[in-house]
Amino acid sequence: MSTTEEATINPDGSTTFDSAGADDAGADAGAGAEDIGDNNAAEEVIKGTDPALYLALAVVAFAVIFVFMQIRRRRSTADVNDFFSNLDGDKFNLKLPAAVDEYYEVKGKCEADGWVPGQSPGPTPSTHHRMLAQALMKRCIADIPIVTHIQSESAGMNKLYSQSMCSVKQWKSYQAAEAMVSAEVEEVRAEADEIEPGWSQVIWRQAMQYHQMLKQKQEQEEKAKQAQQKALAEKARAEEEKKQAEKAKYDAVKKKVDEEKAKMMTEEEKVKAAEKAAQELIKQEEREKQSKKAFKDGSGMKKGFLK
Image (tube, rainbow, N blue to C red; front, side, top):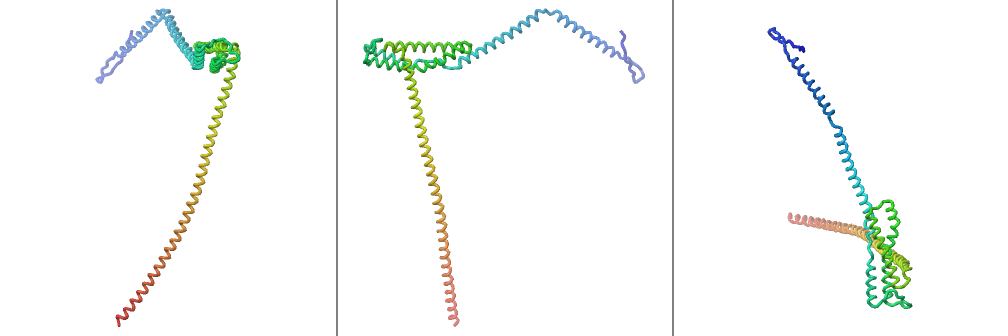
């Protein structure tokens, strides 16, 4: 291969040839050869990669995405369940009223005194019969709020459960409350028949009527209480307004009196000032008279002295 040499003219007229260009050309050629070799090696590595490796990487990536989506879905489902579980709070965390235990205490005392369940009271009910009837009616009236609560929630809860819109926990809580209330209703009826046969057919209707009467009475008492409080507030406000008006009137009169007093004091001061001025004038006149008199007396003495 021929190379090109560069000629250099020296100061003395001689000429030298430099082979740097040739060396650079050789270096460039070597670098090009190395690049070509590297590209060929990369192509050989790519051609030599097993396709199964790509398939394995794809499977791993799919598995990671699938696990991530499952975890996210479970968290979302758990959040929804918690939402429906806590939606109503303690809505179905019901408890029987204290009147239930009080009834059984009265019943135990009556049985200890010889009362026998299931006997007809007759035309003149005994003391035990009246005590038990009153205690059972009190119990029944105290049960009315939880009974009406379950009745009002029954249709809505069944609809939510049929549409899978409530959690299992909430549904079980409702079922437990409904079973407790149903058992209480049947137990009250059984106790009513023991006190008076046939009373179980009407006891709940009577209890509802009494409950409505008591509720209306409480509402009337509350309204009366509110009206009384309103009347007292109006009376207090009227008294306060009256006091304010009287105070304003008093302040106005006092202001007027003070103004009149100020005017009177001004007139008095004027009179005093005039009297004072008059007294000053009188004193001044007296001084002038005394001066004139003294002057005359002095002149006479001088004439006598000269003589």
